[in-house]
Image (cartoon, rainbow, N blue to C red):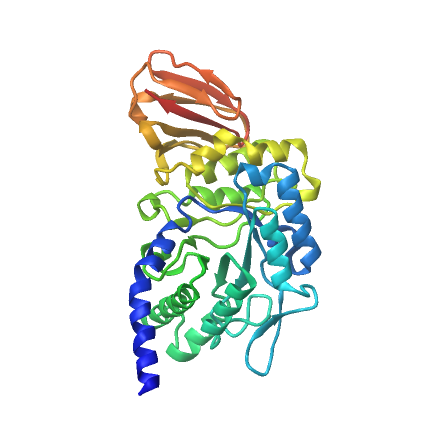
Length: 395
């Protein structure tokens, strides 16, 4: 009888707390998350010391104050489970709670990585069969962000349905993500939930339904212009699926990793902010050039990404390798990006009427940091190879 009363009381409290939990959830990722992720630079070699150094660098470089607050540990942190099934970090991360406390002391938040399958992409312990247990452990450590990578769960989907692309497998996948979301909510700790399943099954149509704050819309990025271009420009048409708390994610930033020119990195950054994409730096923060830091911390460019209206931009015009994209901003303004995807310089003309403005609209070039003017309602610029101009246009 006592047990039934306790259960009943717990259920009543859960009902009373539900609006609070929902309110917390709605406030998570109100703008696209910004921070740093370990994978692009450190991959499987990341250590506790690397993460602490990244936290230090975010502060000393000014990136934290520019909005980069999440310090996210990707794959390979996991050790073994104990006799009770509790996950423990491996020797590279001797005390995850102490690491979280250190990161928090810097005014930053700590993210971690797992997946719904038995193993992660790198073959470490996944969360399959331990979802509630892992969520509770993460909350006890002080984790603020979880990247949840499909990986080995696809094998379970195939084993149980015969075809990992079947409707039954799709429902399995949705249920697996929803299970972890519910486990995270049950901890009472606000933890951003990042779905990583490479854009399968039009995830942008159901990511919100299973509790995602962001969801990968593509396969992995790498530090080559052709891959960044392929991923970024393929996002046309997805703008209606993004909103505060729920974002399309074309993967992490490669800015500063050395495989592209500064013009190409500016195009990369410009496209990501037009897309209202998460801005997760993936470079070695201890060895940034002044140019890399300037690209990552341009406050006017970041403001486009973080605009409170929470609208993703989209392509409005294209001709050959030149394109114009626009993103609605608060107060009736728009961010307008002029892109040259060609391997040689190209002129491009913006007609203000095509983005909803009159000929007397005000324009500011956000990379150059100066006002520019139109002539008879048009603005023409010669863009270098893989170059970009990012404008803030207002009436």
